[in-house]
Length: 439
Ligand code: GLY
Ligand code: MN
Ligand code: MN
Image (cartoon, rainbow, N blue to C red; front, top):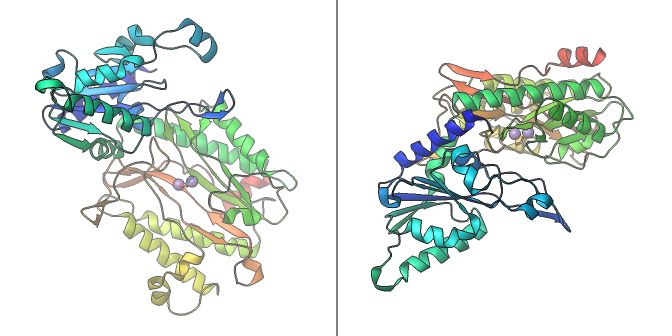
């Protein structure tokens, strides 16, 4: 674990302490292992909030953060799996309670078996509890049990918090704004992912399978330091591209079809999220060109609205205007531009949002509205811009458009005077893609 991450986590815990009301305690659970099939588990992925505040990589832990002196010198405590020779032979090494405080800069660590008694003692006397109710079922049960013990203790010997606040309100606002440390990791994740897309474009040919392109992408991620994808990779050729979260990735790549790849690496917990769409054989057909250029025009037009003070709504309105105008020109929609926009006719072909926050979660946390109003972009926010058009085989349109699904997705960071594109190195104009694939 990098010392830079540990310092960063300590800083985040201090910011959280300062944001909480006086005399408050926060409880944050780690993720658990999830069974995949008998005696085997899904690869472990740490809970994003827990990772953000602790950097601690093991399952089944709890982080406790206080801003009161009620706990003596303890302002951060970790409950974690204890060292256990037999368990470590079977399941893997553990950091353990002796090493955790120094390694992760927490004041103290306890074995996870002491969690209930430990939380009763730590929470006792705090005025406010910050916790994410509904996020992790076992923790809800545990916290209820602990609060009940505190409330029912004899003769007011123990005091339960008067108020419980949702920790996500504070924490997710913090996570929305990326530090320089986070931005540098996200730039690397974007770079690795961009090169993986280039490798997949270069590998594509008629007769290969979607899973060959998926394998190339994942191989590239791993060979460049990103062990896992940030989400299930989508490789959809032909009509499969019209299934937004298609992950079967098991069809043969056919001549004169497009293939849509939505794939991003996870690096040190942070996601990239790139989509490119290109012809299996390296040459766009005329209908494919027309729709592809329209999606690209929509993306480029919307880019102008990714700057401080602007909003997703403003950028999205711009993309929708460009897409609807183009769909009318191509005969996929008919009637007046404004009517089509107001009645959202474009949604037959563009049925998802223009983008989302990006960070530790691919659909990252952070409010999109504040007091009911669209949230303004501000420096340090990282997000995706991903217009698309999907004309499925069952759409009632001229057959030449059928089975064409296109999305172009880039990752950007909002800067003081606009934005910076993190994923620009993957070709996306028609000429750039055809040139790369001709090589
Ligand atoms: N890969 C999921 C998304 O683009 O939102
Ligand atoms: Mn995506
Ligand atoms: Mn996305």
